[in-house]
Image (cartoon, rainbow, N blue to C red):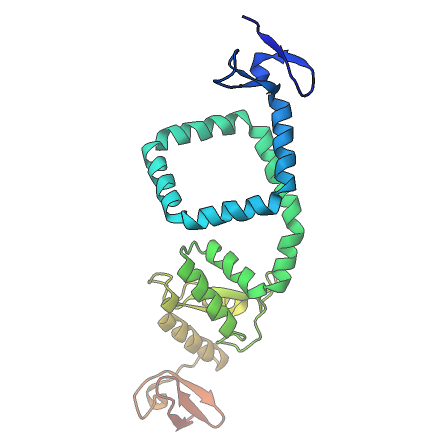
Length: 258
């Protein structure tokens, strides 16, 4: 049996492995080689590119659920084979994969820079959610909505910067209100980096106590004694305001007694 054949298109004699098989042919192979078939098919595609794309898209939309179910079923029944095939491909094409990733990263650099400038809060929300290991589309949307509403730090009232601030004190940062609870949307808020750094891992109650200790240091080591308690609620959490003191708990003002 002959192991070579001449292509009727390009006229070059080639081994039979360079020809597609055909059941109806005498020798079991097509008369035109694989290269000529592929070139002709590509030219045909280019001449009808938009029509073919529209047809493929229409078919996919009409059979979307069926194709997704088929893909899921195929993956479940062939999970080990797919994983082994992927491992083998990655091992055989390490350099090609690395070059492809590097080229894509370089091509996307300008796009990422333009995206950061055009959507600073969206970019901040995506990076922050990833940094804090928060998962799920809902939490990303909630953090973005919170960023859209938060323009100033709720503690010191400085204007927050979501882009280009880096590690500046007024850059926006995500903080847990109660450190002993999870990072749910009800337990987080956006504050400036300075206030977040000051709070650290303190709870709200510990932060209140720290503020009192700060007042004590400012007033020469004195904290409210028995005579300086709030005469309304009895709390010692009072701070000097003008010629009197104001209770941090109930807001009641008392006249200074020393």
